[in-house]
Amino acid sequence: MPEKKGHARDVAVNRRAYHDYFIDEKFEAGLVLQGTEVKSLRAGRANLRDGYVRVDGREAWLENVHINPYERGGYVNHDPLRPRKLLLHADEIASLIGKTRQKGYTVVPLRLYFARNHAKVELGLARGKREYDKRQTIAAADAKREMERALRR
Picture: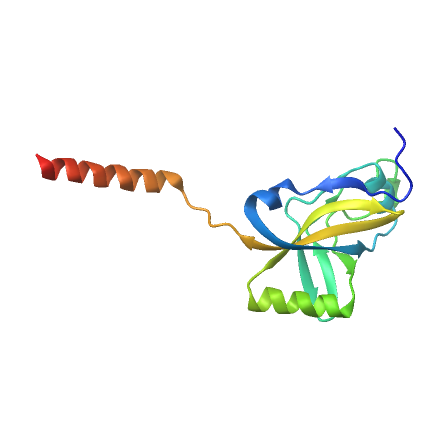
């Protein structure tokens, strides 16, 4: 089925981010791609699972996002894990710096897609979910229950 002109087409979705974080705010950024990365993304080969955003001065970089090498790229293929520059306004970057430093947010990529023939990334300001080992909690509850039973006897 042909896609309608002007509509977004998902390349990759980061389901792990929705599982590990509470997403408080979403925004989009452009993505600077080089060489065969565009062809590889058009083929739908990217992994956002361990990705995050690093802000250096006045620039934002997408780190640890794996874009597979283009299968017909030969020796001119790109580095799959290289940092990629995000296209954001200076005000947006300043806002990101403030929210990550003051409120403790993490910026994670949620979705990579094409919109009007441009590569875009949907970013989320995320708070971590508190994860704990349930086995320890269950073991502590069992021990407490056994102590109460022993005291009743």
